[in-house]
Image 1 (cartoon, rainbow, N blue to C red):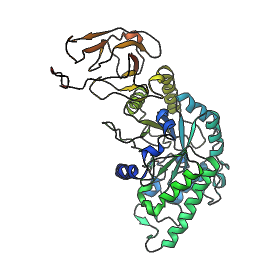
Image 2: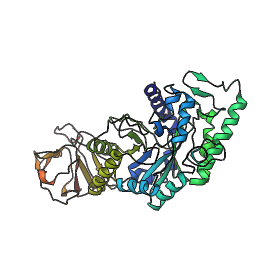
Image 3: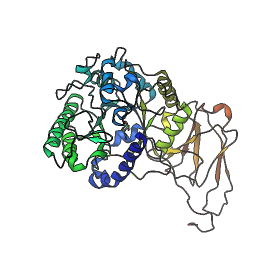
Image 4: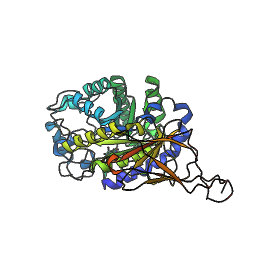
Length: 446
Ligand code: FHN
């Protein structure tokens, strides 16, 4: 059921793409989007009372896997005893990520700050007895990491919110518009609290599928947030009033046409901490997915799910450190680059420097022989292996002197210069990349 709903949510996101592009003109936001386009990697954090029992965040009671009162019993176990926000921020920094998105409130309505609009927050209703967001955002800012706030529009706990369990709603908005008006006041008030307390660089809304743009008062919300901070970025889950798209778990196969997009993905199968879920992706898998997203012009928002005491599971720590070490060696081909050349020129992902005079080739598998680039009209000035600086030789094969069709470039990649995960070759060109995309005939355009 959860999966169906999530898939439904994803379909909604795709539907909202067209709208988003109508309502937010890319030309108007491209300056504020630049840091996001350069950032490539963000860390998503799902932390909430659901980590006490280690069950599905919010969905477990909504889908009736657990009774609502039992779900709320978890408030008593949320201690944050070993919570070290600076260590979290430092680990995120070490991963190479440039931004972090923290759940300020999930669909269960439990706020992670001290909210004046509700007692259902970790400061007033859990043994943690404090706002856990303020020190985290402060730590992120100390580490120069952009601060993102995940904010669920849905609040299945609030008595004035219509939806509750999967098969029972509290009321119908058309019959009780006054209740909806009360909820809007509440949700807009909480959003304003998050806005003024933390001034997020990025808002990551979720759950817009339950109501229309009109019902959420999406244009008004967007205006409130961008008036407060004109540079704040809004994800594409505000019924068409966002700035970028957010495919979830599902990896795009062809390059998305969105101006800016971000794949959000879990390291195992779940967003929050669930001890029985040991289906961890390997560092190799995460790195190849990351590289593919960047090569296709997107970002990766990689999720971690800390435990109720604030400990980050060791598998996730390991993953972030491995990713960070790989970024240390190879980040030049990732950060501040642009998406690569079209598929077909190289059997693997590619990125480019912004002036496109440097091409980065990613080798997703170890190779015992040369790799090949097709249709490259430029002269190659040098080829360097990132991480160790080895200079590689290449050979142009099959170039006919009188034909405009370029030959095939074969690059020797000795085994001892290859990365343990994904090797990156920096190919310095004589000028901006020029590709031959014809069919190999005798005429220039063939
Ligand atoms: O329902 C949520 C889910 O629990 C999780 O927070 C993900 C993260 O992108 N978003 C929702 C579904 O789209």
